[in-house]
Each structure stands twice: as structure tokens, then as C-alpha cells.
Image (tube, rainbow, N blue to C red; front, side):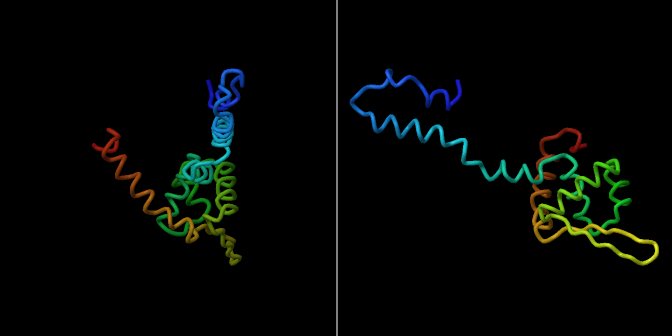
Length: 135
């Protein structure tokens, strides 16, 4: 049974002695899911597999589209969509160089660079806890 179902339980089950306490508890329980956790919010912005792979690759410095495609093994459509998403959310900058040949470069913004310690912690955790990284 969910917390919302519990919060909406039959009022006949409560006693008349403390109606205000029960009402505020029910109200608090039903409003709890409306307050998202910062971890959940963060993962919604950076948590897809391809976003993480691209962000991690860009920690090595500025890259052209085809370099990212080769390094990440993402198909062109997926990579294009991910780069657009990361640019919209402020993690990646796009630079167009119009010299011949025309080239598009991608790099991390300060917001994207701020994820470096997060990736270091994930790497440390993986080496400690995942067998395929320990070998």
C-alpha cells in the first residue's frame, strides 16, 4: 500500500480525540512525493547512459563530433540528441569553426567540469566493488 493510499485512509478509522493531528499527518504524507530529492533531479539531467559517457569523454578536453562518435561508440543520431540535451542543460558548449573544412567542437562548461570529482568517486567505487574493474 502506498503512502498516498495510507494518507487517504477511511476517516472513520481515526478517533475524535486528535482530528487535527491526523489531518496534518495525512497532509504531510501526501505532499512528500511532491518534493523531489536533489539526487533524483540530478540524475534526470545527467543520468542517461549516453549522457554520462559523453560527459566522461569530454573531461579529456574539447572534441569534434566524429571523435566523440568514435570514442563513445554511439550512433550519430543518439550522439547528436545527447549533445543537444547536454547543451540545453548547460553542461556542454558547442563551437563551430567555419574554416575549411567546417568543424564542430564540443567542450564542457564550468557546470560540466564540476562533475569531474563525481566521476572520480564513481571510478573509485567501481574499482572497489565491481569485479571487472578490479582485474
